[in-house]
Length: 316
Ligand SMILES: NC(=O)c1ccc[n+]([C@@H]2O[C@H](COP(=O)([O-])OP(=O)(O)OC[C@H]3O[C@@H](n4cnc5c(N)ncnc54)[C@H](OP(=O)(O)O)[C@@H]3O)[C@@H](O)[C@H]2O)c1
Image 1 (cartoon, rainbow, N blue to C red):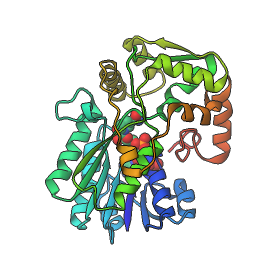
Image 2: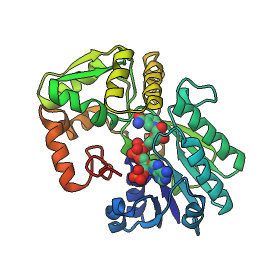
Image 3: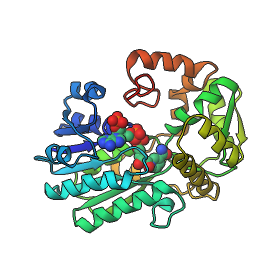
Image 4: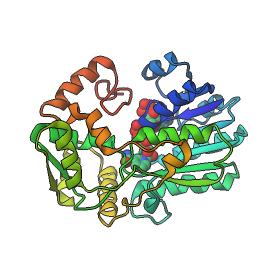
């Protein structure tokens, strides 16, 4: 039995679906089963629980031999994920696959909060002696649906504090495909994999790709980090998260996201998805008026435009 934590999220949901379609028994730890009815319908067993509740983790861990661990960025992320690691150790789980941060951010004195938190969890997992695989992805293409699409679809402007930094963005479904393969094999124990898309491109090139996909002119505006922080605060992001995002942007600006890895092809045997394919698939999110239309559709379907069980329409 494989326990998937974060199964209502972008990567975890796809991991659960891929594992089930490959015939693996899958259990998902979910905080709210009503957000996971689609997973249950696909044959995923649901265990209600919370990373903050050790007893619920012990229950979810019964009979589990492998664990997939991803959770939302959170100032308590390392403590919450540490609870899952401790429970996995108590249940004698044989392999932990964890989604971590981009490699240059993952260190005890790293430049951004969540990278430091990822390092703490990785370190804790290594201390347990349980075989592990750490997946360290680059910037998700799916971020663009949340951060860029609203302004692109309103004003035709791709605003970001990324200067001309090349970034090897990755489709989160490819991270999931790597995870699903790794979870069903013993060949990836005690490995750390960078997971990126097939090439690095800057935001000006990204604007050109989005222009091609939408048929509408989209222009990149390099935003000063202070202004980007102000906008994020105005959108309601808490201070710690704004600070983290600004620190990450600074890391990208000095080229930390430019390195391309071959992990997706090496592990899954097929090439990673391209930004051109992603833009074509999601062109409706970027065309004028597209986001408001998509949010209306999401409200009807219960899934948000990034593929998560909708949190746009149903506040917790
Ligand atoms: N975005 C990027 O570019 C990027 C790049 C590199 C690494 N990462 C890393 O990727 C991770 C996020 O992955 P994602 O985008 O797939 O996540 P996501 O879509 O935000 O989903 C997060 C998942 O975690 C679950 N969760 C949160 N708190 C929980 C708790 N206390 N107990 C149980 N489950 C909990 C959520 O469940 P609910 O449905 O109940 O909320 C949801 O299933 C982060 O660690 C981030 O640092 C992101």
